[in-house]
Length: 394
Ligand code: SF4
Image (cartoon, rainbow, N blue to C red):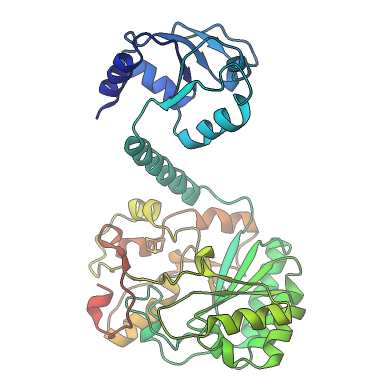
């Protein structure tokens, strides 16, 4: 139902009622500008912004503050805001209880469905803006300690099932994060140690020591599929506790004794959580195809890509805005392809003058974005393992 029809319907329903419209923000202004409200008996528009400075009129209607609603003479409050449930709770549970208007009917000017669609659009716009806005400081970086994995998910967007066995050298790691500590003055919110499967690294404990030493206040998290957690030695749990390392487990639909893992984490005092903050098994597979002809619109892709300026990856002394280009060499080698990664796809941490130069770089599309066929991406597919056929990636 379009919004004018909804307004007319409300006008018929509340024909002899005194109506207050709640909300005078951008959404409400748009409603008043583009619709005819004359059939509704609006006695006032209420909004917090009318508190200061006092305003008398909003599209010709009397202005009141939320506080005024406690005593105001009205029968119905129609919410003109995208956060309907939030405002409804505020009115019912905080503002109007035990007041004259406690039993006033509260409804929304738009249908739930319309609001949900609008909210989705707003969230997506907000996310696009975040991607293209340089961060104030480096929030999160991902470092692959291991190239290969013991699960090999279908369509892995880091091409891990195609990788040969490979371990990050501790000296290379140390050198890189020393430079990173210098650039960021150790101001980094989160360092993710992942792979492939990071628990496969024989020197994992050493990586934990080095990262904690150089980043004393950073949230350092191991991102694991959990398969090997139950066979970790005591030294692993003790090191995680001593170095304040968090263990984040992605739950897969495979047989693993999660209760035993939880118990161990608790016994050793290790912070542990499941990816997505839920203990429900939810790992799905996805299909993120590459356009081998490189015909995609880089800017459009970057704006829409959830990994852009988020899955910032450090590899071989270079920072990438996402995790695809630093790992595509596995795809190239396995399928004998030539997906190109150039110096314009990353920024060298030893050459960058300062962190701002890096933050600016990370917020811009890279040539590699032309390879990503973002429109054809599919998510939420039933989880399965890779058959290592090119169709999983193109
Ligand atoms: S290359 Fe661009 S579109 Fe592809 S994953 Fe990275 S940021 Fe996203």
